Image 1: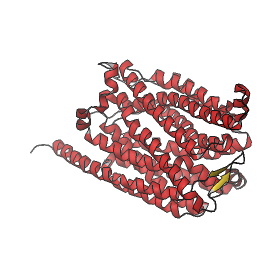
Image 2: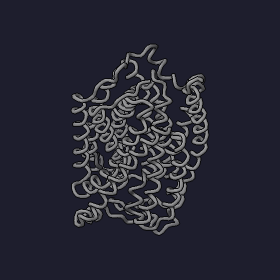
Image 3: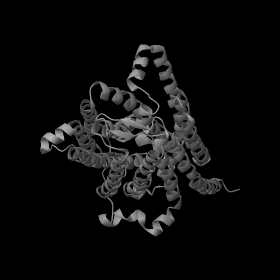
Image 4: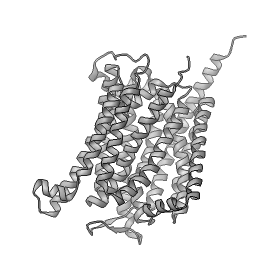
Length: 460
């Protein structure tokens, strides 16, 4: 099979939509939670419900729109128009507040105002997720599989894996400082404008994948394709990889919705002070920038290694490193030790994401790429975002009373439970379970590689 070459235009599209999509998802995953927690007055249980509702919306949307993109044989309209509308829905959050709810609905009962405002945030999160999952989870991810092959997917996934990290850094520092200095509405308006702009640019840069044709068969029939027993049996390795991906993602979701709240209210991290230090000490900023460049180079290099030597040798080390990193964070008592431990976890998570992400694309049937995006979302988004935050909320409610920093007064003077270190121990336990499917997948992949190598040997 001839290797697919990725030109500069394709790389630009990958980075543009990959990065802007991750910025939007990071704001949703991190700051929608702090927005609901600090600004609106929601609880960890409200966060749990919002994350679960958003996950269900994301999966249902990806099933419907992914199969639709297969049926019509087009990805570009769903990507570009979807990003434009995604940005519009993000800006809508700038208008949500208790005060606006009271004025619009003529409410005076504080309890009713709170309940309605919390419900509005959750509903709008689902609307925003519908647009984001249409353009990013369904269409863009299918397009990315279409334009790559097993010879370059490790490299592409390494770049893809760096985009969430870059987005997280930008969102954590930029959006955090902006929300404090300018308020949430201004930040939501700015982010929405950027996401919409990406969609407009894509109208001129995105190319439909070569060879993509309209799908055959009944559309509704195709929606259930990935659930048929014979399909699961024929694609056993793919589903084992989905299981490994699911457990790793559950571990991340145990902590991610509560991470910024933990940093702010348990470890006492001040995002504005951190930004001020970087501004006042250019040498430190330069050193951090150099370190980030080195990390990017190392991650891309790792992706190239997987393209050259295969994904199988790296599966188990990645998940072990991720598990160890989470366990180390449990013992971290300061921002410095937290950062060191989080670096171990982050490295493992990056390696795991590259190896499993590329492997999933390798084992996805080429004629059902769009349809399988919905199946992938069940394992990668729905189950993790329902199970993970639920575990997190139970840990917070169960252990916060035992900690001196276990409660916090929000903007309305209400006492709420604060995330605690036990979150990371629970996440490590879940991540350790991913070792089982990783070992199983590695064995199957090793046997397949051996057969292909044997078949490629010339006969004497």
